[in-house]
Image (tube, rainbow, N blue to C red; front, side):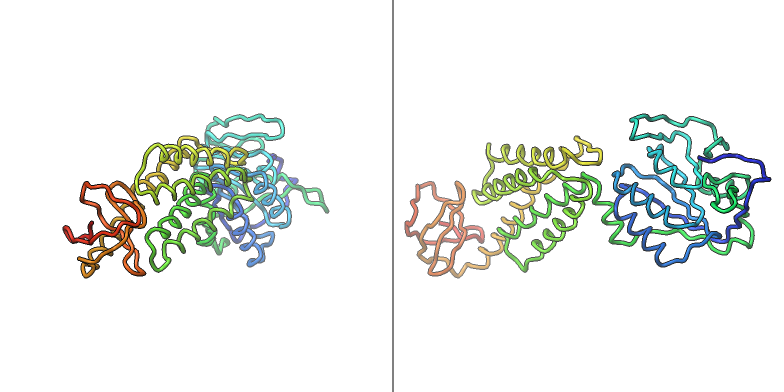
Length: 378
């Protein structure tokens, strides 16, 4: 870690450029790709200071290892400031940086020994790290204090010390690096709640397209949601048995929509849907908020129970209102959709009509179409 040594052993490194990269949200491949792209596109040298503002809510071991490999491949002085929230960070990640700063309340964990401790120190410079409340104060203290790197030079055995004045003309550029739009979207859907929500919503949109056939826009959006959300499965370890359970719930929801009304089968569909989320994320590397997953299941069920039927009724109302020319035609009943709706066939056309008469109808019975309140009825 950091060591405060006498100035006699310092090998000063004059900083002329500062690059700041923020790791926020779920620390995932989205951040790794952005850092790799920046390093490949820019020739970083010893006069550049690469700073990471670490404010991740969760991460996987794979992301930490990949970041350590990237940091070890460059000779640029590297610093990390953990904050501003009370963030939890792995001690192995901190050891990959030359200079370490944390905000008060940061929790440091050691995954190898399963130990953790919270830093409650007041702001100041301590042996091995600095406690400051903002990244600006952290960078400014790096330049003004004799703070030594934890990595020695191989040739002379001396210790590096950063030397710069953030307000001087020597600092010709301060870059704030951000992931691309696609990488930010990937980081957002890395959250298990959004992964599950977008994945299930994508299938719901496919179901909507089955019953309200249009130009295929809903199916296209649904396919995109399924594709984007599923790319995070391999990174964090989804349980694929949960996908089988999820497809079972999807088929049940489609069956319910085909029947046109909900009952005990709707409760079964919701239960299986939520069970699929529990199984899918049972071995996930990220922390799962069970209350949020239940809320996600309610949102998807609401979409099946309310939103899709509303769109279907609106579409059918529009279709039947435009078919008043069928009034008086003789049609044959082919299927009962619900207690008050039936599917009838006129020549090669199939129409959904309302059943207003209380008399019982039978399949293949021929009836005459009427029009009530702008809707085709029998």
